[in-house]
Image (cartoon, rainbow over all chains, first blue to last red; front, side, top):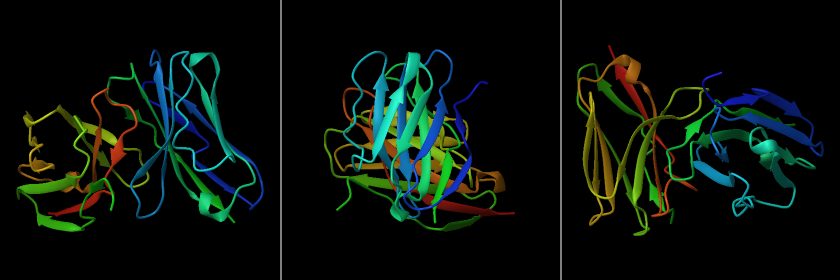
Length: 113
Length: 112
């Protein structure tokens, strides 16, 4: 597809379960970002991948959060032992390079019961 | 205090009005300034971006940056009902567009 693709679009799970969220960036984009958008809050930066460089994990809120990017393309954000405060929309963005504007997917709406 | 402040609205205007959306910020290191539009249950869509101070125009949209006042604006001329959305300002430091810092967004409602 032409844009950033995220799956699933919605996820409902029980507290304590692990979840995996997937992001397919725009083809050829070397930079990939994850953000979290909570109700009434702005987008909160989580993690940034640029090419083969070590990711910038400075925004991850706890060690329950991790992300990987395989083959410089698809990325997976994993949340272990989910808590109710993890409920939010998780947005992925990509850019042609780190110094180019970011383009967003439609997000995964995560609800923790 | 947040690095980027934005009035959440809602801002209600009649069709055809000129809309002014604004953000203030505290970090003088910000050099790149962006405006995104977000429709309900969709991801943010990049509208415009500027580097440093000045104005930029694209169709009905004009972005202004005043770094001396740490204040940025987005003007929408001849507003349309289809402009009804949440508008997010975002900014980043001198290394480029990484690690954007967002405002909370202003909800705009344009009535026919």
